[in-house]
Length: 334
Ligand SMILES: O=C(O)CCC(=O)C(=O)O
Image (cartoon, rainbow, N blue to C red; front, side, top):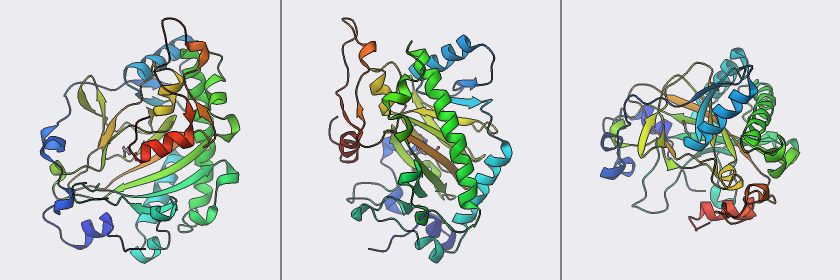
């Protein structure tokens, strides 16, 4: 495998003053030319509010109008959130050699492990981020050898967090089902029930010498059903709404919920898969922990029949998640 230059190494070892050319975005993609609109706040929903009807309404509105919302009152303890962040930070603070033992190799189908996105040609720009990606559930698909062994508590903490992600995703899928006037287990069952997969991606964005010219993660929608993201206190995420980028500010212990492509398809477009990007910071390291909730590869996903009628024809084709993923990775039409 060819040696990969890590963003962390580039950022911390070279006394870098200027951004290397492969990171400099074309004019119309640069944060300095595509600034977020001021004075707009993303929806914030408390899951612990007592009125179920109001909760369903708020969540369905946020999913339809934004494809994105922050949740509080989710019951995940701040202590567990702190531990998850600490074990992730500790992994990225290891010497390069120890991290390289986990290097992924996408060319051989090894998606799990430590990675940096490679470019396929000279025009394509690089993202200012290193990451660690691994399966988290179901247990039959988890290979613990791929998880960091250092720090030693990584596994125990991440297992605890997984239980909370399973509980929270079930809860949000129930509310979203009710928002479509479906039985509350409908979305979960369409996504594969107990075969639903959870994937962890820890993003590490080191300080960047010219953040106004670079992107941490390029604009995209997630191919998941849902993404539950926990950021550290350094803001950087922006979501696309009403033809503008809107900055999402850190809110202590809130989980950021993205509607992904699979829920857009199942809801026949009622819920929107949100385009988003992340910016980087000149002085501070940003990190985020994204958990992708995805159907198993064999699940067949299409607009749900009870939602279709003479006035609501299917807007999306029906296919397996494996086929959807193949098309998205290879930039083929869906
Ligand atoms: O770090 C973030 O806030 C967004 C990360 C993201 O969009 C991704 O990893 O796909």
